[in-house]
Length: 410
View 1: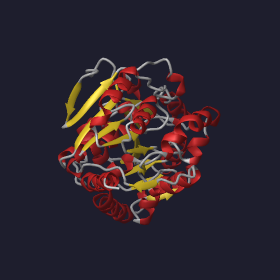
View 2 (view 1 turned 180 degrees about the vertical axis):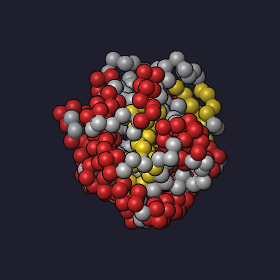
View 3 (view 1 turned 135 degrees about the horizontal axis):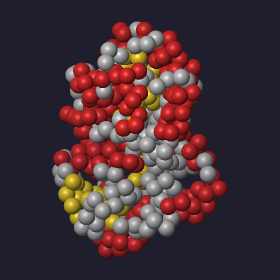
View 4 (view 1 turned 90 degrees about the vertical axis):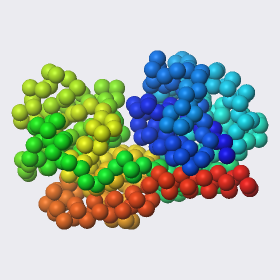
């Protein structure tokens, strides 16, 4: 079985968030199970650091990075990613694949891959990645609606299947757009061999001395308004007022200077911070209540999970929540809003506390977990069990292979 995965940006373009991780993890798992996977992508976020128009092997996955034009970057955060070279490769090579897996909606790679899939009568699967949620779709509707009406609608309806990663996304999106083709729900996954729920907590405290002897509340994700950091800082200020044995660890890449706003809020609540990305802020280290680490990957990221006590993701909108799954895999109790895509699964399995998007709700949830260590342990155990049963990448890959086989034999 030969699968072509078309995606606008790819590993290791980490600035684009969890999607970069989830797509590569799936492709890597498929390859290990004997599936031939080729990726067509752009060098977005990787300019001058990867070979272009040349196939490379990335953990067994055959990846082709293509240059793209930046003339259309006003279209979205990553731009439209117009790539004539990718178009040429699709036109010449798409016939050699059994099935095309197209990730994303508002980009040129998705549009041109769907076009040639239809032209050559190849089955293809579309992955909206949360971009067609009713609430998300309604933002900047003046820009999205014409593009959807004249282009996206047709190639969505012609797809062999629409792949959603959560029940919530499938229920809300498929009916909202009146789609009648096959809807499949297969979650994103993590490689459990890379995660453990028994870390040495001291290694994190050795790296960041100001958190020694503190209960660590961890946020890990892009520093962006959509992640609910305004809610988090307000809730944490209430916690820090109640007790002096807590510390907030903010791990992630700054998005368009948004951390400046976050720091201003910290100042306004009378708290101090230390930013390990900027030496000038290290003067605060002695009495800091908040630490910015910058982006962490690999073992450093795992140490952040393993050394923390509570994980929080108070997002206003989150298609899936890869960091939530990673936190649960590391045995952390999680607090998330009901705008995070996997909230139903978390709530149903008592694997975390689900709240409304409000500072008071977040404060109460964190306070409850801090005061009840047995509850923290119970939630952590349930979370790890949920990941093992539902988000193990090997099980996810098996489900996707079954979907591919069903489509190809239909």
